[in-house]
Image (cartoon, rainbow, N blue to C red; front, side, top):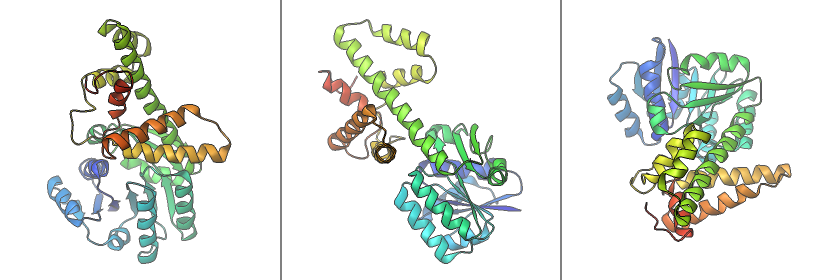
Amino acid sequence: MSQIAWIGLGNIGKALCENLARYGPDSTRVNAWNRTYSTAVELAAQVEKENISAVASLADAVNRSDIICVCLSDDNAVKEVFDSIVDQADVAGKLFVDLSTIHPDTASAQSKRLRDLGADYLGSPIFGGVPLARNRQVTLVLAGTSAAISRFRPYTTGVTCGQLICLTGKPCANAFMLKLIGNFVRFSAIATLGEADALSEVVGLPPDALEQFVKLVLQGAAVGQLQGLRAGEYHKTDKPSVSIRLWNKESNHLIDIASKSGARLDLLSTLARQGDSVKESYGAGASLLTIFGLIREQCGLPFET
């Protein structure tokens, strides 16, 4: 029987862990661990299957398992958990799959320390929010050895995700670099749609003109993004699936990477400042999409649509 430890039960981690228990290969057993033990207990009870159990000790969860999936909020949390694992558990022969969104340098450092101890490390950040995670439609980016990817693949498509981007044989840092750059593209698109929509309203274009352009020319995800923004998704929920705190973290990582690489990214700097403005005005827990309301205010329009 394959045993998998799941470390970290935030919103997206909980959804992925539940799907792993429900839809993983029949021989899979999941050992769920979270800093708040009751969260793991509640998840195990919710799944109502014998193949998942809550584990109170991080070391026990790792020692019992062959594959350890880590899904944590930031670099500090990742470093603290791996420090504890290395100090308290035997990691030799195990595969660590890191689904967190972290700086590529953090991933490289953890990969090296684990490989030095006889373990393997697979970068596996996630594209997609909680609703997609619940429906097994997120995209995972895998970067690491061919053996590591093959070992984890049975727990991916149709189990925890809808599709894969495989960077086979590439450094684990590549997966996290792509995650940060990909989210930069996605956030840029949201900000661009926001400015285009606000300008269209200010200059008096018919409300459906921009939407028709987006449907016919841009197509794809942009259609749903514009419709969601206009419907007020950014201010109608108290529990956003993605908070501005995450963009602040990721933009800081990207600025650091660009600086070290000698690259000048003016758009990134602008979006980072807008993210800071959202945080200052509406708090770190505000929705990432609050940027749309901020743009409306900057154009002399009401915050809410």
